[in-house]
Length: 222
Image (cartoon, rainbow, N blue to C red; front, side, top):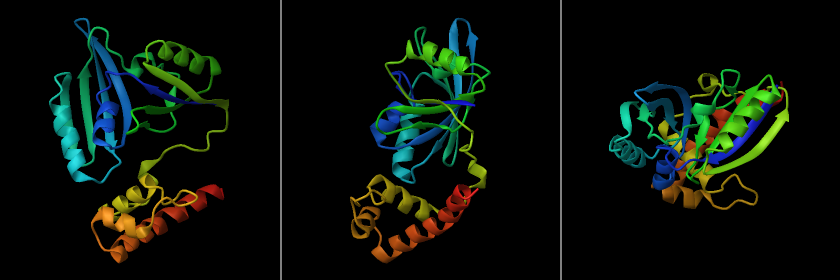
């Protein structure tokens, strides 16, 4: 199996630009696109990684105000949108062939870039995808292109379910470098950012870790 990981940016993306604006991360699965009267329409399903409700509300309100968005449905942290591209508008799915599939959802990062990880049975299919895509992106970098066993595939439904408090604690800890070496923050600072007591924050974080660690360790031992 051939796998590539790409870092890219196209200025007319309705998601990653808002991720940068509102300092939020969004996972997405581009679905399909079609032509109608000379215009291209693309549909994508997205998932908020953040638990900061105010940021998510502002994100969706701002997205709704975008005149290019022709359809939008929101259900909790999940939302699906359709965008009408301009005559010269770009969308990664325009260059995506049926012989390529997603290893993981696309990460739309608050650093202003999209991170794609896709695979194919044939190297030449990935190379053609990369060649076509690179010409139309404002920024493009290959982070990985290798032949590798497909051992790391994203299955969201089998992951342990976390409460809102646990998700928020884990997100804050990760974003602020609590798991870096050396650590860049403390539990006291994280609790202050979360606006809750340190004991409550620590409880949320530890429960999240206890739910996630067994699944991750078990996967590594396979």
